[in-house]
Length: 362
View 1 (cartoon, rainbow, N blue to C red):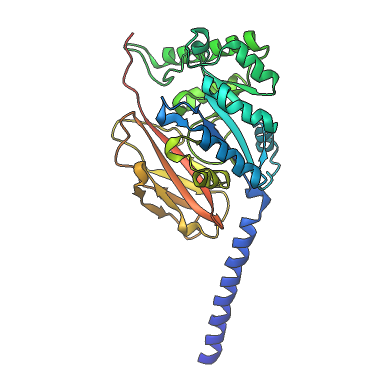
View 2: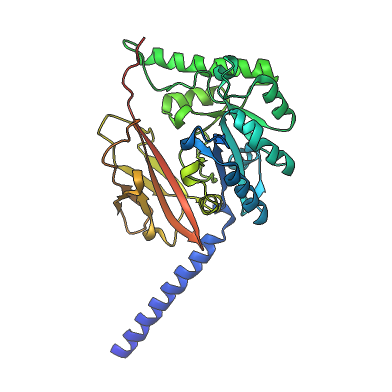
């Protein structure tokens, strides 16, 4: 009896092992879990802005890596089309975006992309163009980029903190002001470039349910500044992008991001990233898929500070992430969670937290 029980237990253990090996292989090779990594650049080759700049040498090395490893470079519209249709992505997809429309982008980055016939999107801060700020492109340069195939996106007119309120201003009034700001940029882009954008990048990556509702009503797809790839479960109101800047611009950094997969998150609560000062909530996440290595999920706050992860059931689909101790000096904090998805590949999820802004002066 004991001998039989031993063999039965041994068989079940072996079967369980085979099951996890099989599901691990299946998950890593499931086309439905493929993703598109959307890269966010600002300055390219302009050392005056070290926190948001990548050197020209770094940018060239990024392009060389993607070319060498046979990545497909897609326009954002194609990425969005796959999310809407539920059509799986190929294994290696990257999209280029550039925020603000800096002249360094026009002079240093765009010629290298044009030489390869690679698409890209420029998210335009229109007041900076209209006021002829010297660090920015002008309308003729934007028209030239558009003629070369660039997608043009709305990055607001003022590039203000659209969630902030002026002193004595009611919340509904501040919301109207934010909508007017976005629509002003739409009008300027339509007037100068011939058509209104369907793509929007939130200034500073900041959003809330009211702001995403405006974007949706205007018929646009929104992009944030929180890390992660775009997958079939991604929310078209606020898609993730990987910010690429001098502190994280090595070829290894680029490879890690370009090869990442969207963590298949079915639910994230609370959905709104806005919180009261010193009161960041616990984040409750639910996986849409059984990930074989789910127990290896690791989450980090600012400066890569580890955050505790607690599972809510034995299916390893629902878990909670402890909040960072406090927000950064600018009121924004991000939580990044990763889990192995294969050899040197990770599922990636990021959440923005942003403090309720103090009122602005009139």
